Image (cartoon, rainbow, N blue to C red; front, side, top):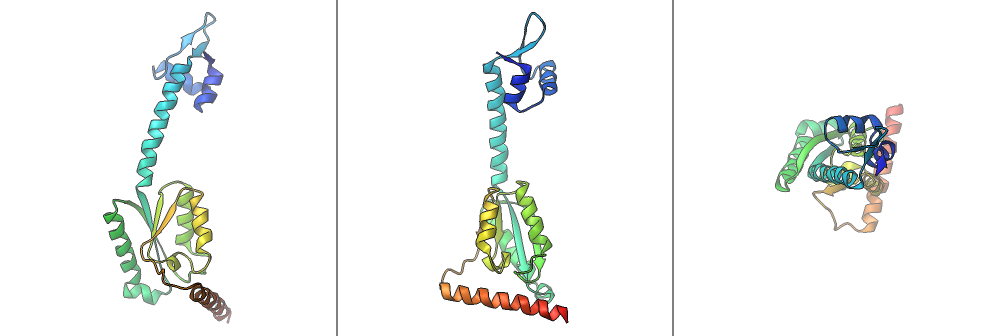
Length: 195
């Protein structure tokens, strides 16, 4: 038998909550001669098992939740409908794989731009455990450089990235050249804006 303080600590609730649960008959307790509440191990385990089942069912729902991230380089591409086509393709993929779309994040700008609002909102919502999967069209849509860092960071919150279209036929040399071109392009853009 546990005192109300120890039982509350084990269950991860405050003492007032246990008193309210006792009053509402959500948990059974025994009273000592002095009127103090005592909780059995069996009753505490029953509540813990119930919480575990609730957590598992809510986690299963989160596991089916997904978000879409789409990005284009310029407003011109956006006007041509490139951004909408990316989102449509990713939405179709979500539907085919029985994923529940929670939110769509989109940006217009360079993959090396660190001030992309859509990407930052995506990362913040990943921390809040709102979804377990992010769908992107190509790796470079998420970021022009450092994809592995973002992937590893998001995995800390149990969020995985699914790249719907893979370009696996790239050699390491061609990837390096693309990264260098992306860096030069980013710096050129910054220099151009400084004029």
